[in-house]
Every structure is written in C-alpha cells, then in structure tokens.
Length: 103
Image (cartoon, rainbow, N blue to C red):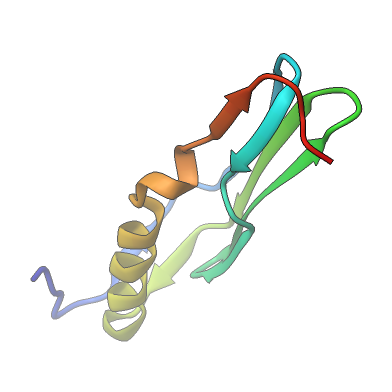
C-alpha cells in the first residue's frame, strides 16, 4: 500500500456543503447512504440522509470543513483509510422500489 516517510502539507482550506434532494414517486426507500462522521486532519466530514415518506423525498447532505493542516506520517494512514471508506458504493447509492408504499 501507499505510505509516507515525511509529513504532507494540505495547504488549501476546503469548505463545502452540498444538499441533494431527490423527489421520488410513491414507493419504498430500501437503502440510502448511511450517516458518516469522520475526524480528519484540519477538520471533519459529515454525510447524512433523511427520508420523508409523506413527501416521497430523500435529502442527502454532505458537509466538509477542512482548514490547512500538516498531516503527520501517522495521520496519513488515517487519510488513506478514510478515502477507502468514502469510495464504498453504499455512500453514493440509493435503492428505491416504486409503487404503493407498504405500511
């Protein structure tokens, strides 16, 4: 795997808040991105989703707030783990079954 022997400078701040609202037909939400909160060098990343069955609406929210940081060799391994976690398909997959919602 990838490793470092010296610290890495992450010099550019990153602040982003993305809200995605999916308006869906009547049906059942079977799977949505799970909640995720990660502490990262310089800040944090949060992902969450809310399903409103009455409005047939799914809101997925992603927030990242990172200040410039010097990432130590040890913390770099944590960044690689976070990247692998963020690459998982379930963080960007919605499974929906159209049709009458079952109560």
